Structure formats: C-alpha cells, structure tokens
Length: 347
Ligand code: ADP
Ligand code: MG
Image (cartoon, helix red, strand yellow):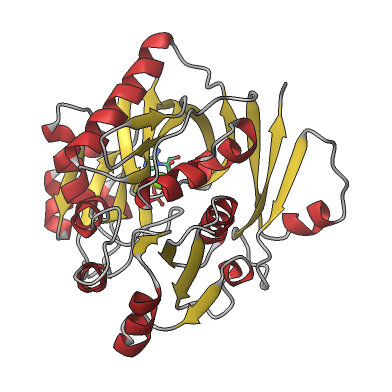
C-alpha cells in the first residue's frame, strides 16, 4: 500500500474514474462533494458529503489527505486557495482562476500567439451592438458554463431579448463554420516531463459531447500543432496533472482553441481502454508526485457518450470483448445527463 492519500473535490464520473485509477496505483482516496448521491462514493475509500462552504467538513477533509485535486473547474476559487494553504492543491488554484473565466482564458491563449475564435467581452446590450461583426455569434456566460449551459445563439440584434438584464458578465464569440472538433489531452509532471495523447476527434450534439474517436481525421500539420499548442499552454501555466485543450477546425483548416479544461476530460475516456496508461492514471501519477511511465497506445478506438434514458437500453445489452461499457451508477435519469459511456476498440 502506498502511503499517499489523495483528496478529490467532486464526486461525478470523473471523480469515480480518478478513484479507480488511484486504486490501481495503491493510492487511497477521500472524496468531498456537495452531491449526496455522487457516484464516486462507490469507488473512494472515504466519502465526505458537505457544502464546500462548510469550514468544519472541509477541515476534516484536509486533515485526512496529503494532496488535493478536483474533477471540475467551477469550484469557488477562495475555497481552493484556502485548502491550498494547508495541503497542496494541484493543478494550482490560480490556474483554475484563469481557465474558469472565459475572458482571462482567451486573453491568456491569445497572448501566447495561439488563435481562438474571435470574441468580445460583454457587459450590456450596448456592448453587443458594438460587436455586430461577430454575428452570427454565441453569447456565453463568462464563468460557470458547462455542457452548453449558459449559451445563447445570436443571429441578429433581434435575438437580444428586451428583458435580459445582464446581471452576469458574458463573452460574445463568432460562430465558427466547423469542419471538425478535436481535443488534445496532455499530462504534465512536476519535473516538467510531458505526455501528450494523440488528438481525439469529437462530435457534439446540442453542445454536449456525443462521440469521440482516435485517430482523428486531420492533417499531420494540425496533429502536430494541436499537440505543440497544448504543450505550450501547459508549460506557461506551470500545470501539473492532466488537462485538455478543446479545438475547433474551421472550413479553411484553421486550428482555433475553443477552451481549456484544467482536469481530465470526457473526450479522454477512451484512453482507459486504448492506452496502457489512461488520462486518469497519468493525472493521479502527476499530482501525487510519481514518475512518468512509458505510455503506449493499444488500439484505435471510439467512444459513445450515453445520455439520459439511453442508459436503459445499454443496461439490457450484452457486449463483445472489444466493447467496454461504463455505467456511472447515477440514481436519477435526467434528459441529456451523462449516464455512462461505451468505448469500442478498433484493433
Ligand atoms: P462548454 O463550456 O459548455 O463545454 P463550449 O464553449 O465548449 O462550452 O461549447 C460547447 C460546444 O458548442 C462546442 O464544443 C461546439 O460544438 C459548440 N460551440 C461553442 N462555441 C462555438 C462557436 N463559437 N462556434 C461554433 N460552435 C461552437
Ligand atoms: Mg467545451
């Protein structure tokens, strides 16, 4: 048994898969979550149900762990920073502060000379009028967005509703004429060593990831650029752990950064079966200070996200030895909720 105990904030499928990876490495886990039903409680050594503002419970969590990581980026930054004063939080909280804020994130990426979609910061209806050149565009809340929540398509000024009061900050992004979407999942270790998985091609439906595959159908140039951009971003952030850069490729074959996820990523689920070391295991290794190990691809693969009621059909099906069904064990079936995934190896 290793003597490291890893604390994980959040108890969804990413937390569950991190716990399973830690178990493989003989690392104990303690999960803290404000979701009483969070599925990671089935995989962790200890589960603490608490509001993140509950100082006593957070203290209990801190006392039980050696190092802390998180499965989602929308944790109040003050909480991450206060935990970090007692036990190291990786990736570093200030990385999260940049990446969970679309304006700071895009400014950071643009300063590295890496292209994003064209965008503008929006505080009022007046700001939208000034940026009509971005139509057709997508208005996104500046913080707290996920799976397309907080996004509004704007084709013309008529779509700006009179009753919108702009209580939050937004960004307006030009709608990209997409040829493809890809992602680059990368793990950076404390000594600066890096492993970059090959780019994964992704298909979204209603802004939610539906399907991923390797190899991605892209040119060698885009393949390399997606990886070098991701490396540069990880290095400049002094990132430790697994992160993901989501990209758009437009019809002119231009590679644009969509967003950075400072965590393991849904598109990387296929790495569990298609590689000897998954994005989850690499993350646990990196944040716990273990050494990088040789990562090898086992097979081409595809992954299907199972949303809402679709899970019922999968629960009643049988699978071949090339198919790997993951049921997240979520109690409530909700429309569009990520309930599980299926990875199919193509060897
Ligand atoms: P989230 O934070 O919810 O993941 P994203 O900004 O990644 O939000 O958007 C989710 C999906 O919506 C993208 O993967 C893409 O399919 C679509 N989308 C978002 N922004 C744009 C854009 N500017 N142009 C074209 N499609 C977009
Ligand atoms: Mg996204």
